[in-house]
Length: 567
Image 1 (cartoon, rainbow, N blue to C red):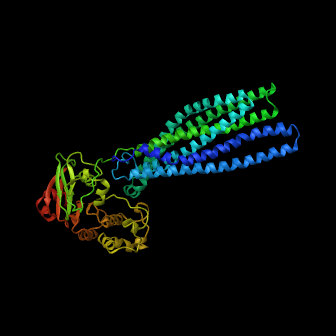
Image 2: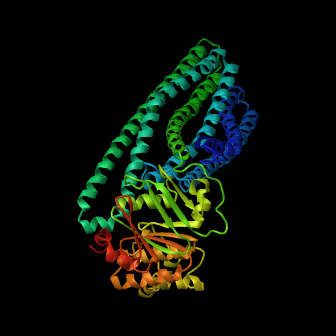
Image 3: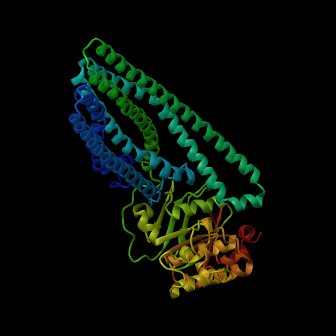
């Protein structure tokens, strides 16, 4: 990232700090609730000693009224505290989702390296939700700590031995719960990794469903997903077993702790050191302690899972950028001259190539890998290992990637359409039926107007997720129209017409030339129809420049060009 870009851990820390006020407010209400809960058994003991044992009806009514007030207070404090905690959790998860999406969409890239789209979606949803839940866990832990403290004080007032048991035993239980949560943390991280991978595989297969059916590869695709799902299931079961062991052991320890308090209290009552009401209060407080101690067990589990998810989010937010450096603005006005000097595209030598401003240049290739490398360099998805790429004489490495992409648009042949109408995919800032003259010209140039006439609602027709309601050729035309509509000074297209028929392709070629007249346009393709309308053609052969000239000249004079384009 740039020097001003915060690290992933900084973003996480700022997200948690931003919710601190709500967590503190919820914790305050929760402490009031726990105070009320702890007072209930104490008041019951007082009622027994002062009203029931003394058969005083007036005192009985008085203390019952006090109990009613306490119940009203603890009920409302719980409601307000829980609402504040849930809101803090949801807002934190929302903040993290935005941070992950912002990082994935950052112009410098790098966050998606080694991850399938479904895995990134899992990080932005499930992991963000788990980390957000840490706010609720911290607040609940504060409640539980307040409940234990109030109970310990009440027991100390009632009996010093009982109070000391609580004060000494609770930290020991918390420490044991922390140790028992370590396996759960490790297995929870593995569970999320496997689940994210399975989601990524599923999304990948669904996106390529038509291709898989065309190849008859459904069985292999199902087997691939079945394997990923089984691995995810095994990881989930291991995490569930770890959680059940952790919860069960903590509950067993808690039960033993409560039994110890009841046993000591009973002995003290038998020895006459506690009254009947005090014994009832002590037993009631011991039973009340079961709630806070169970909450501690739940908090340990939530924190273990939250730490695992936080590590995954931090890995995305802190991912090294695909391109670094470059904060300069794009030269104004943008003429659009591109130049490659010594750029390695997979061949033995660096490529020297000039793409003049204002011309339509075709680039034919004998190796698709060279085309992909060229497109990544021109779009600055990756900086070349050797040599440099320049825009109007300025190296791309000096330019801010966001500003650069506003001037140079690289439209990949496999770009995605989004759910929504055809019009929204071409021009998101306009509604169907409100197209301006330039948009209408673009739709006609890409022959999307013909596609619209064949659809039930014209440009307002929903294209479905990924454009599945359209054929392959129709999707390509919409993608081309979207690229043309952007109107950038420099446009680089990669095989924009591979799925359309020859007649339509020839019309699109003429429309492309007219629409982009006077602006720098590069078409990386081996299509004769597109290359025929270019001002100049370059052949990349084996990662080096093999020939240059017009399409007609190269067809007549260069065997390598004829094999690449006409074979």
